[in-house]
Length: 94
Image (cartoon, rainbow, N blue to C red; front, side, top):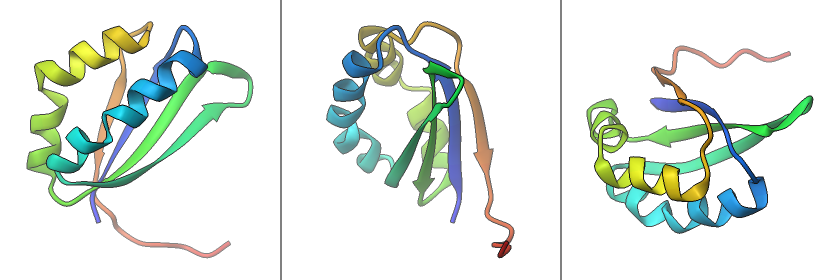
């Protein structure tokens, strides 16, 4: 399954998280199947999201949307996100 990997910093995680949660229906309308949210252990303002998606073309549409840019600004994203579109290749056991 394809994924989007996004890394950005936020001004305040507790303020950012409700915006992320409230945006789930919009993400789903673009084919999101859910997300895992991580925080950098050494910098709590750095958030990393791994979002499973149905289709990378729809994911690109979401990433280019004005709605997403507006929500990120409202939520307090404080830097330019790093975004990677990923195809699943394999799962490797430890």
